[in-house]
Length: 335
Image (cartoon, rainbow, N blue to C red; front, side, top):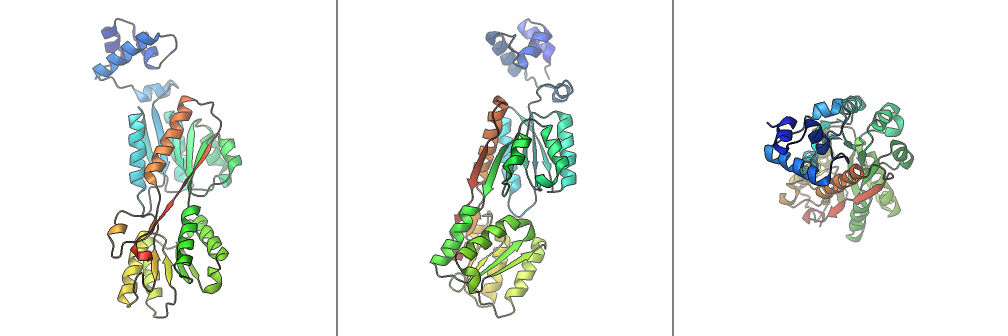
């Protein structure tokens, strides 16, 4: 693999000139810079990121700290982000946060040691109650934070970060409106305690539309996915199920619900509408195809990388926030 000395010899300049040109130093003329960059590409030069980090220079590296768990497909989203960053000339250091403050702190310390140029961080914790995480985030100057619920703009300004909110509200309003317009009045909602923000939005919409006064029910569990499914199957199998719509925590639970309803002679969607969440890959191939909520991962990936590239080019930009609304996908299971 070619090094700086090889490029210097090819261009007839000193190694110091090559180093300055590769870091786009203003002392080097535009024509000379283009010549050296062209030679570097031709010779297959790859910068020593670790050496640059130790010198405190630009490392062309981005940290991606994200929770990779869930029945939805965060890995696909992160792969899309990493590929877009690669196209822009950046290497990605991807870490699974596990939504665990201990893991998050350790990963942030590692990123700081590596002197990453920027960070993409999915906020899986309450930053306001984690001053240590906030202090670590402050040491990474350029960052984009993505979350489904975060509304604390004071914290955003203190961290000097850009923020993207993946918004559930529009899709949830559409689901409740759809149930109301199709004559469904007794909604059985299955949720997980990690989804408190989503639950509060659903509960508010159900309340506004009078559903909670007509026998709607919410199950909020801390169980794992398999246990949630077992709980729901047991509940639905007792024979006195009187609801006409079920909103499941995700498409996998929705699929299990449809199976047990059909086994008990309850028709979907004629007797009961079933709606999932996350718009999983197999949802549209289920019988009947499962109505769901699309997380718009491709658009989120593009928006995230675009925001980060903008602040990498102009670090003096003030903190900005954007919102990306999830979409209700109507399919046969909802009627």
